[in-house]
Length: 311
Image 1 (cartoon, rainbow, N blue to C red):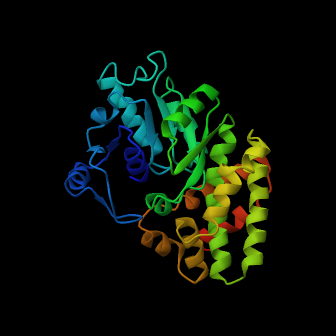
Image 2 (cartoon, one colour):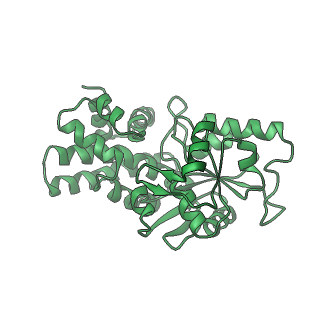
């Protein structure tokens, strides 16, 4: 809803798909979203539970679901194409180019330990996939406060196309061919944000939080480089930028999760009360599995996982 709103306000032609017909009908009637802020959706946003209708004549398909539901949503897109020959076969801006898949999801898939663009590429292999990541706390974006993000894609032409398509007055976009680093920066910082929230929940001070963020970035770098990322990417918006924002603000669900656990609440109780998924939880489990598999030392992530398990 956040991206739909700011893209429509900037004059883009936007369709928003809802899995539930009842929710689509409610949003069409009220044009009101309640989370993370109570705010109105522009009348120009076409809201529907008809996936084929939403996909018709689209240049860019943005996935804004949870990391553990992405494969299911992408599979529904694939099924919609199968039942409607010609859907998503060419790009409006350039008929020779196919529509682009964009993941705005920051996490790793449990079990496969895949990045989100890998899930998209496995499910929809004939369409180019890229990732959008950076310091993107939705509540601030909905208030038209400015931010910047990165479009990661191995194909720089695709990255620049998405950059131009989504660049907005309140959202300055950069492109980066290191999609591995862009995606891992966005995913791994959520684990560190849980730890940072715990530091503040324990009232350990600004020095301790700064140390945690710095050492957290070192852990993120070790794992990302081991998986093929470039170290410089983690020093940019999708790494350090997102890390600083998420580790410093109660607007972050992952920060709030860590904070409230440190205040004595059970992890599962805090999760249930957040009203939305804290991606750092599933990512922590995936990250620890990856670190053990690759022999990468990640002591903060290990402690976060143990804390989430109640250990």
